Image 1 (spheres, rainbow, N blue to C red):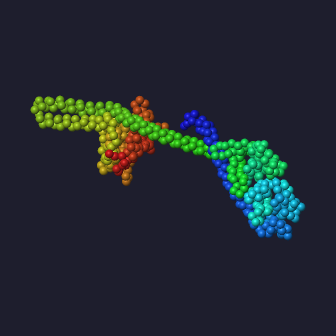
Image 2: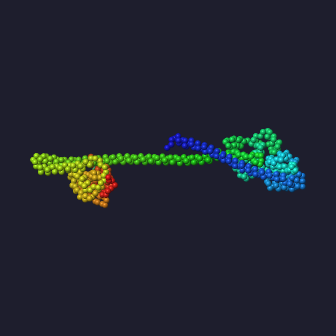
Image 3: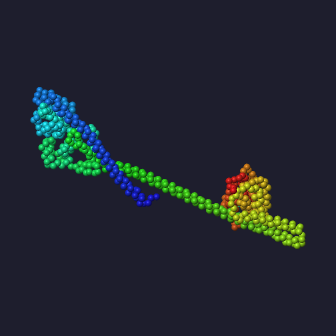
Length: 576
Ligand code: ADP
């Protein structure tokens, strides 16, 4: 069906190729999905943090417009408790960590945590950039590590004005751990990590603790000096986190601690920092194994189906071919058999002629001798002028010539093969013709014939020549079987039914021997040694079968054999 090289390609090389393609396509697809996930998560997280930061940044601004606050900062100590309580209430309601107020020296003069042990009251934050920058009329958002709490936070600060003069600063601190915790609730953490990177490359917040206040960038000496002097992270010096970045097409891949990530980043609107989302793609390669497993299953399934379909198709083709060649063989055999059959029929005819030739010789010689005698006498009568006697002799000669004609006429039909012509014939005439052809044999065997007394109206649908050949065979066989018998009678019997006639030839011969019965109609079976060809009965049966009739035989109770021919008396299928 397939050559060996094609099989090797289909079973070895092609699957490897398909597996490689599936692996790379699956991998690319999974990385694309990871990229989309990173983009989606960074947008989601940024939106949330931006909204929160906008909310917190509005609080110090509102406080700077508060009349009580302005008069307190301007120097009205009677409002001390009211302002501290007010800050504590707002801190509680907003979720901020602390809210406090600084005077122009940077001293804390009011604080939401005024009643706690770790209160900021009395502390000085003049060194903090959020204090200094607030005096430049800037709305400040600043990341730093809390001095007392040691917690990371974003500080929002704004100056309090009185008569267009900055008289103090309101500061609100939000612990960034709040966002780190909220991020868990936002469900953006599945298989991914995030970090918020400040302009100085220090990581302000991240879900991974080790990354916090450290950096993915190797900081230079100046950068380190600046960080140290700003004291934003107090005495903490950011550590470099080892990572490797690679760019392929549109995706950036990170490798941190043997883990591989694709990343997406976006700047926050309300705070000068960039949010990064890293989606873990370390397991993308191993995740292809289950996909490849399915590819192998589907491939094997398709190959099995393909092979079985091809096998079926090949089988079907073979079947068609063998059916065709079988039909061809049947046609050829039938043609050969037909030829053999024709040859056999012809042989049988010739055999019959051979058997009859002696009798025929006698049959023809007798009238010829008579003609000779009558011609000699006619010559004499002519010489004498006895015309009356001459004319009588000529009439006799004419009769004798006609007889010879008849005999020869009957025999000549045997000399050539004839086609099948089913026509209605009176049975009596056919039997009489056969008797006449066989008369020499009958005479030779000294057989008494009881000629049939059938009604001329009894019709059979046969091919006359072939039927006569059958009758001659049967009569000759009967005649030969009676040779040597005491009683030698040949009789005929007829039974008529609605559409059939049953015609029998009965003899008083030796009868059919028991062991002969099973071979009776077999070709070339004969008990007559060299005298018989053994074709007569087999040919006769085939001829009668071809008339839609049947030929059978049995022994008679009183001795001798009976051959029965059953024939249709109505128009049959085989006719011209
Ligand atoms: P053949 O006459 O050449 O032997 P047949 O086919 O005509 O071939 O006959 C086959 C055999 O059937 C004969 O050899 C003979 O033994 C047996 N047989 C045929 N007709 C008769 C009959 N009327 N009586 C007894 N035996 C017969």
